[in-house]
Length: 75
Image 1 (tube, rainbow, N blue to C red):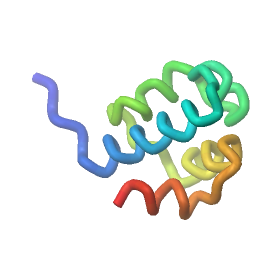
Image 2 (spheres, rainbow, N blue to C red):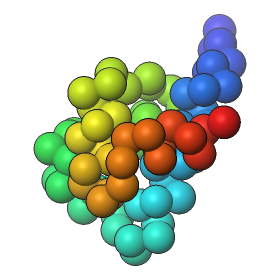
Image 3 (cartoon, rainbow, N blue to C red):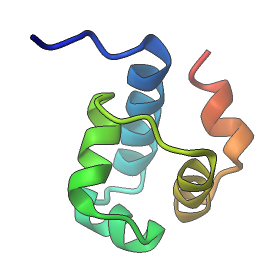
Image 4 (cartoon, rainbow, N blue to C red):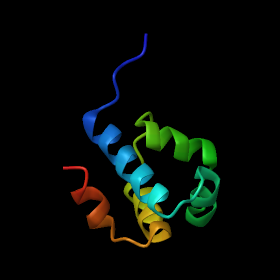
């Protein structure tokens, strides 16, 4: 049985996907820049995984935005 991912996780994933697409990067490109596994990044973008603050900060740095900006867009 699949549980529905938490709203915050889904929203965060959508925000990451939005910023990645703004850069016209593939998941592979962002994962490499953020030093993450591409499969894990896919899970984050789908809202299937909730990243730690350290991972969220890596994504923000790779995307060239502040972590607070990523979180603000989740609200």
